[in-house]
Length: 185
Image (cartoon, rainbow, N blue to C red; front, side):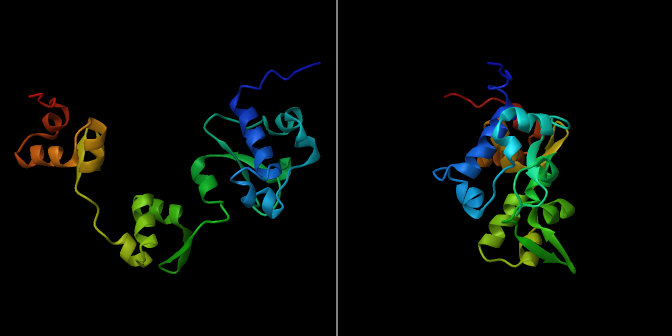
């Protein structure tokens, strides 16, 4: 028997997971795929058929995406895209109105330079779009050319927010505050 030799590769896992979402009613994602009639073409029952159609354009940083989320998996409806493109092509995207235009939350956050999780959390708590996007950002600092909130930098450095904030309030440079080891008393 001839084998494709790709059983332990990322493309094989993508194909296998696609089939599971469409065929296995015990799969947690089945309800969003097979459970609503999404399937795949006959050729894609085998990995070889799938790979013959989809190997062009594949890259490890891309994911498989259906152009029309109401149609099944086949060569004409599938493409390799980055995560941002795929996130903007989901059936459960929340569409937000802002200044007379419609955006997915991801698109609006990117347009305004806002943190997606922060805006999403605010809207889930009941804030309007305008309220959620107009809260001033947390205090930010730049370390090694990267600007983040104090809490994000603290987490990266293995410090608590309060420890890093206290060091900065004492007048320490950002470099010293981020790199000085903790004392072990």
